[in-house]
Length: 149
Ligand code: SF4
Image 1 (tube, rainbow, N blue to C red):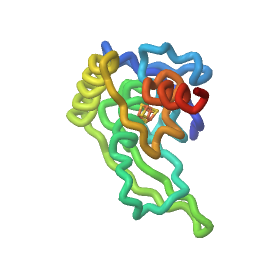
Image 2: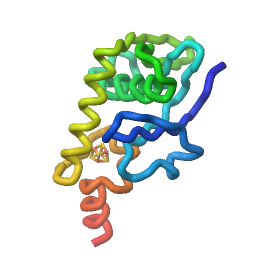
Image 3: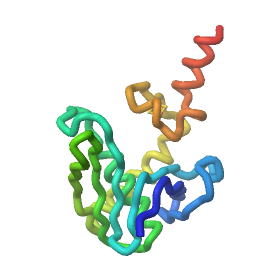
Image 4: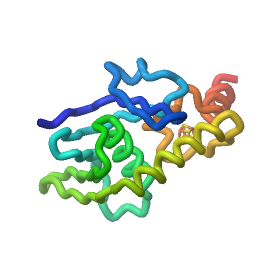
């Protein structure tokens, strides 16, 4: 069975994850992830993409974060995480298997990001449009203040 648009909040202090009813219910001090589609039986998660699969944009951070979120939610040590490109010709997918070592590295990364967050100076980029931290991101607050000044 496939689950779509699942809001998952990760507590960066202990690496645990749980599902929430909506993205807005995820506590502010958690890492918020909304995974496009995942299967609990297969321990697999995919993000839909409509752009070119040959784009030079790196989706590695998203693939790792999606994989970690679903692995932590399900309590598994291996997870398949991938990108599913949708076009008029059908769906082409590519995926990576994240093992216990990959997940441990990602958990460490989340703890690091949480420690750095209070003094972070984020750099706006193309991903801002979809970023779950947009509402609280200092770069966005400054930008919106400039636009309305
Ligand atoms: S909204 Fe902020 S945190 Fe999100 S991608 Fe843009 S600059 Fe980075």
